[in-house]
Amino acid sequence: MKITLSVIKADIGGYVGHSESHPACLAKAADCLAPAKEKGLLIDYHVTKCGDDLQLIMTHQQGEGDEKIHKLAWDTFVECTEVARKLKLYGVGQDLLADAFSGNVKGMGPGVAEMEISERPSEPVIIFMADKTSAGAWNLPLYKMFADLFNIIGLVIAQNMHGGFAFEVHNVKEHQKIVFNAPEEIYDLLVFIGAPSRYMVKAVYHRETGEIAAVSSTQKLALIAGRYVGKDDPVCIVRAQGQFPAVGEVLEPFTQPVLVEGWMRGSHHGPLMPVAIEDSTPARFDGPPRVIAVGFQLAEGKLIGPRDMLADKSFDKARRLANDLADIMRYHGPFEPHRLPLEEMEYTTMPQVQEKLTGRFEPITD
Ligand code: F6R
Ligand code: MG
Ligand code: MG
Image 1 (cartoon, rainbow, N blue to C red):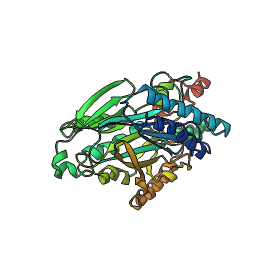
Image 2: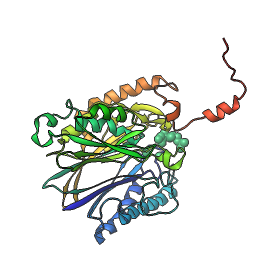
Image 3: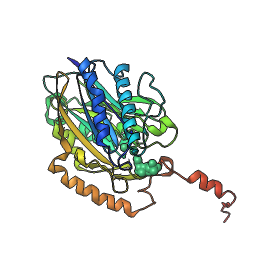
């Protein structure tokens, strides 16, 4: 049975500031999706949130990039924006960059990750969602999940994945893509995905079968709008078990909270802290960046779940480490490497400051 799993998300207004989603917006989203399930357009849906991002998880049989599904998501965001407006939430309609829907939400602000699959006899999927960071944040965990032998022992000892995985990488600034085969091309792969502000892992495939294993959202809001409109706050779908990494191999990368771009004003490096859904409430210096993982079993497209995968106690140490790292990064205040390099900062006063200082910079002659 062919099923499409679509995760479409947008920040339609924060509560309080950019720290959380209001329950009334989540309730409204569920009200908007329910009739689509009754009419059979959706097989199932689940509404959740990660920080100030409203997340629509939908299953259907319309395929990827379908106009009806995308319009449903867009209309849902518009209705939820009205709820946010009445409550005077913060940054109302922040990620809705277009005035009217035109065929597909890609390029209109919301983030999208979709995969069409033939549902296996048992189909565990994990949906990662992050707040206060950008799509490149998935590069390192996806590499560990599908290519790092110190993370995924299955590559070494499981016959059905010994052939490795292929990584589709997008250059989001020049709109180009390339596929690298792991393990033969991992040195080449890492040259690119180690620079996550430009090169992002879009998808991962099981090489022997060509089956999709993971897909991420790679929308860069700033590139769409041409100005800062908030961080991309990406999502990523990963299939688990069998010829794919075990659930524990999928989650293991998040035991090491590494530094990602985002945090305050989208202009800082900070640790990606794995948290339970209810703890995705970035409050300290608008952060630190958060990641949640929502697990489901699919049953003929029905979403059996959710399970809040990173709520597990075994991630407590990673949370402590992330808080320690957050302290160390905060020591730097407005200095790099806490602050992003000039060209990556989402906010800057540099053009105005340079303008003001015109004539005061002199050549160094000695
Ligand atoms: C980062 C983020 C926040 C805001 C900050 C300022 O992605 O959303 O850190 O950038 O709170 O927000 P404004 O400019 O809306 O007051
Ligand atoms: Mg926001
Ligand atoms: Mg957000």
